[in-house]
Amino acid sequence: MSSDSTYFTSIDKEHYNFKWVISDYALMFTKVTGIESHIFTVGSDDEKKFQLKLSNNTVRDARGYSKTTRCLSLHAVEMAGQFIMKYKLSMMKDETILDSKVGHSPCLKGMEIQILNVEIEEMKKFVSSTDAIIFHFELTVSKGNIMNSLNCENSKMNQAFKLKFDWIFLEEELSDVKLQTASKQEIPAHKVVLAAASPVFKGLIENNSIQSIDMKDVDYEVAVEMLRYIYTGRLEEHEISSTIDLLVAADKYLIEELKVECEKILSAKIASENAVNILKVADQCRMKRLKKNTVDFIKQHISVSSDSEDVGNMILSMEKLFSK
Image (cartoon, rainbow, N blue to C red; front, side, top):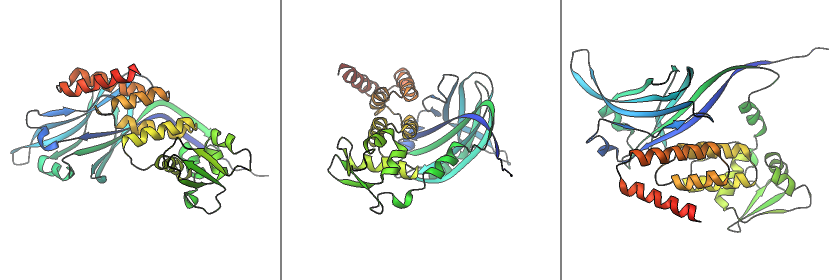
């Protein structure tokens, strides 16, 4: 008798997705030479904090003439020890990725790593129709622990194997249950797929005679997006409010992987106009990392913002939240 074995070696690591939207780009550098994103934390502790910086930079060409460029750099604000990190930066315009940069670097506290350095005129090609520039930053930091395993594929490979149900997503074909949503619209689904994804669904459909599931507290669009993730492992881009509703639904039906994906999306989109709502849902769904990221943003925004009306609105929103 023969046997085949596959060994896997990987490293323990932490991921973070961060989207930095710079509005009114044409006006941004009229009085300042640089701007900074809010500080974000990679991992569940406070040991690894980063910040993106976009600033003017003067360089000289081969003929000795000086020119001004825009330089995007990553600043290691807090770092307990030395780590290796890798990154992917995508420059987006009107929801389309125009260019991307990938790289890796050792990382120590206080280091600034230059990611992008382009001439000001060239930078204009990334400005959207609404005068915004969007940087989508994906960061992976090693935790340093080498892991060996036998006959054990990584989680993404396992997920890809389990979630090959694109062909029956929202299809009547082979469906054996209907989901009743808030708008009274029905969605065809498949009991075995739902049961595999959610212990709540599994409990509801243990009785094989059930023909429909009441989801009347979930909007149709949110239910569709939840099913998209269950069947395909993918999510589409949506407004913050929809992602918040999706997180609430994922929490109710105990779909932990979807909760983590929503947490990543919301963490990357924290802004003054949505921070209080994100904080509320983070507390409601017991998402500690999201709650911490939001609190960090609010504290920093209040301390550095020169827009008193913006800060005032945020404080008033928090007062309404905690008075309920």
